[in-house]
Image (cartoon, rainbow, N blue to C red; front, side, top):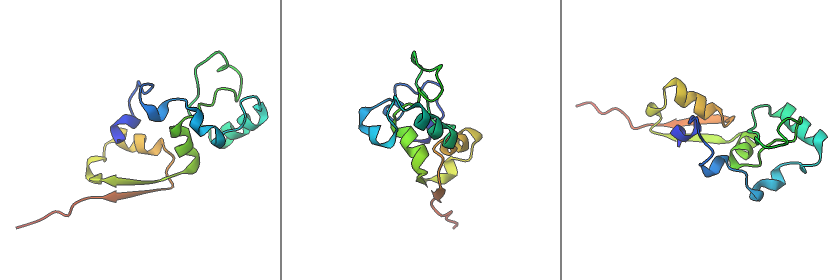
Length: 110
C-alpha cells in the first residue's frame, strides 16, 4: 500500500526486512567493490544499520524493497485519485518506478 511506503518506522513491514530469499539479486557481502558499484548505480537503496554500516558498500539491505528499486517496476495505482498528496507521490517514487499507471473510476454525471 502507498501509505506503507512513507511511514517513518518501516522495520516491522516485511517488504523492508532483510531476507535470504533475495540474495541472488545482490553481490556477495564480502565483495566490497561490487557492493560499492551497486550503491553508486542505485544510491537510494535501503541500508542495514548494523556494525558494518560505517564501511562503504557493506550495509546494503537484501530486502524486497531494494529488489523493486533495482528492477524499476511498473506501479499500478487503483483509485489513483487518492494518491495526489506530496507524501503519496514521494512514497511511490521511493520504488524507483519505470512507469506509474493510474486507474480511477469515471465521474458519473446525472
